[in-house]
Amino acid sequence: MTAVDVVAGMGLPSLAAGHKLRPVLATALRDAADAQAPAPVSHTHWEAAYFGLDRTGLFTHASVDAQSRILDACGRGLIEEAYFIEKAGIAFAAKMILLADTVDERMLYALFAADEATHFSAVRGFLVAPPDAPSENAFLDLLSGIIESGDRTTLQFVIQVVLEGWGLKHYRAMRDACTSPALTTVFDGILADEAAHHGSGRVLFEGAAVSDASARAIGDVLAPFLGMVQAGPQGVVGAVEGVLGPLPRRARVRLFEELDGRVHSGARLAQLRALMRGDRARDIVANLDSLNAFTPLSPEDCA
Ligand SMILES: [Fe+2]
Ligand SMILES: [Fe+2]
Image (cartoon, rainbow, N blue to C red):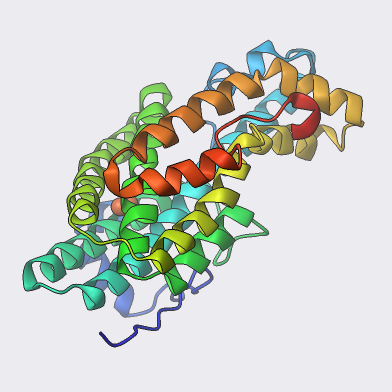
């Protein structure tokens, strides 16, 4: 099969406001009404308890203004991450359309590409001043890299089986705790689509022969990804520091302890391990186990 060169395009710009193509796109997205929705002014769609902040001294003793800025930063972190994942999803589906070896599989990925474009557009509507490109983010770098370099089997496992499976749990948790009815509706739509994306990935991967090169590529991307999950709620700590200023090491360790980072990461790592079940992935999981990749780090190591 011919290799397909894809640029993940995480930093692709948007068309200028008023460009003649924009109403055409809005019609295709069937969101002409949404295009008139007022621009968002905040990202505060979750309560402090969702992030575990209600258990931390730094948050509970902060001023009301600092608390609301921390919650806005945490909410922005969630929405912005979803925005870039959906953006990357369009490139992923485009590559999979071209790599498909049946017309049915090609049709499926074409429909998924439309889903991802729809998700991206919907999530973008909840971001104040959506950026074109992400600021430094190791997870998004890893995601772009694997979309660009991965073969069909590697991508089916890493993106559809693991990341979209995990995304289902993540979006469900965000939806269940979300305080904005409009954003809850967006998550409902995304969840329905992502279930099909994940389910089809499972079917396709189970029927695939996993070459040594694919198994190595899968391990090479999942080990650092699991490393990020092992390192606890770094985004929440970053949001607190973004508002209150850099914390001394002892205060960071205490914050990770109060956020219950180990329990939080342990549960996520167990979910990820469960997603990797199945005969085809047995050696991959055994390798990751030998690296202790499913064990959360201590608060000292997270800090
Ligand atoms: Fe999506
Ligand atoms: Fe998806």
